[in-house]
Image 1 (cartoon, rainbow, N blue to C red):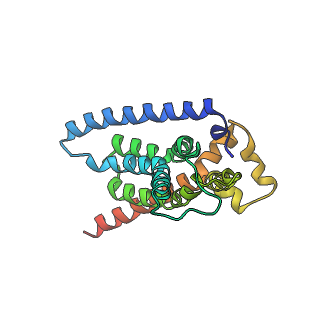
Image 2: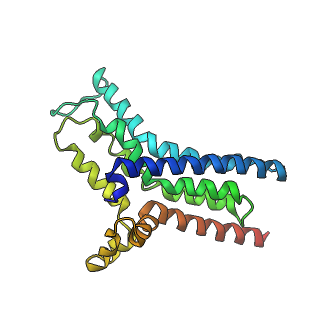
Image 3: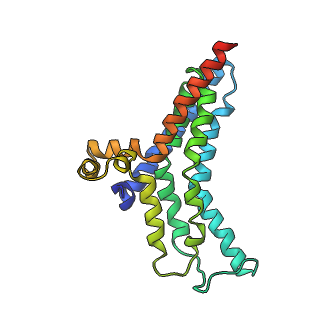
Length: 215
């Protein structure tokens, strides 16, 4: 697992950087929107998706917990509990979904870059698909099984492991264990969520430009 998720200092530092990036993009984008007289409401979509991906699984887990507590849902034989995962995992999920913040920053600063609007939608959809696995963790987050955290860790590792390490296992994947060096940068960029987001962005730009040229 990436060191940034293993240590609270790195995790909270990354969250602080993302918050600063969001504030910077918001104010710069507002100035750009005022100057061009073009509404930029569509640029908020990546931020909304980021909030849903980060907080949604815990909110879903709370709903399941309440369903268990009020007898609306039948829990497993192992029982259920309001675990610490519900409080802590949103921070992990936010760091894992940093690419949504990068997309928001790009759309706010360069809303007229090619077919930015269609590219944004393709990118958001592509990055949202892996996050379905995080919502599937909601029952585990309220499970009373003593090793429930292992399943959560496996899913987190799957969404952090670089695509290249999955394709080329063995000694090649060792370069992604280099702490916060170049291996860490490559690992962050090649993780499934940002990788799918980049592919979605490029596909959206291509389709948008093709449609524009055909008109």
